[in-house]
Image (spheres, helix red, strand yellow):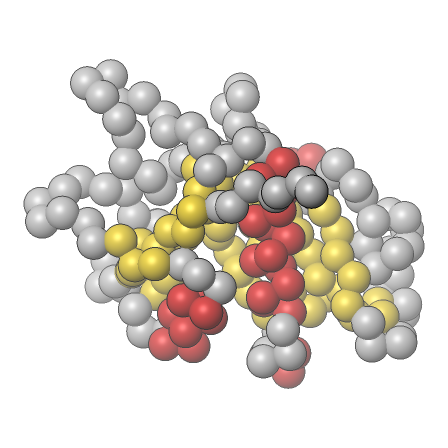
Length: 169
């Protein structure tokens, strides 16, 4: 699955996977760069772990407005998509941990901000993202910003967060 993504040159994409093992601890897979699932070093058995959540983060910028007359791809902004946590594992901090890992990954790629679209009909997700420091960005009236590919009646908030660079002491 991880090697099946096609991305433009110079862009990065990682799928983060939260896995709960027999002990109840949640572990993460960091895409193809550090392929470990639940501490099993790429050897994964559903008898030894259970996928509880996923998140995709990339620098492809498909859902960010292009800049300039040549409509160039934006750089320095990571984009979160496909956040999902199994229903019985919700409200246990898994999504928060996935978001924190996505932010750390974006920082390691040199990104200065991270963005996402949030379904207006999902107040729980909006609350989660605002609690993690994301702000709603008002899209200018008449602006032709790209939208996620869903049903035409679905409406989104565009949200963004500036990433703090880690300070050294």
